[in-house]
Image (tube, rainbow, N blue to C red; front, side):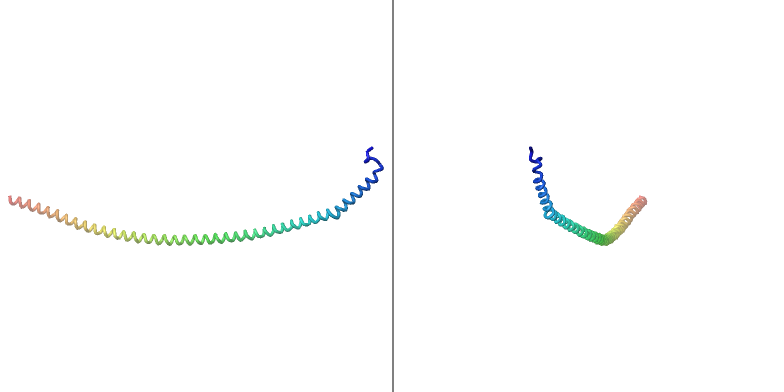
Length: 152
């Protein structure tokens, strides 16, 4: 027969079962459960500290992003001022260059007019001289022809 099923051994088996269960219950109650509670509390404290750090970091990120936005706005304003200043300087330089070119053009036009006037005067003189020469030649030819006719 098998000793596990023999009734004589039931009392000793029940005794050791109760002893083992008591040892396990006491071990769990005094050792394992307090350690697990301590681990859970430490874990909760750690998680809470991490959550606090996350909130602090989120606040810092929000502050930094607002500062960054302000800096961007300031830089945009400064950039626009620089661009406006550069545009004004360019406008001034363009106006100055245009005035210089206009004065140079006016001077060149005056010189060209003077030269044209002198050329026209010289042309008038030469034309008048040529007309006088042609008239004189015609007159002399006509006078010589009449003189030759009269002499004949």
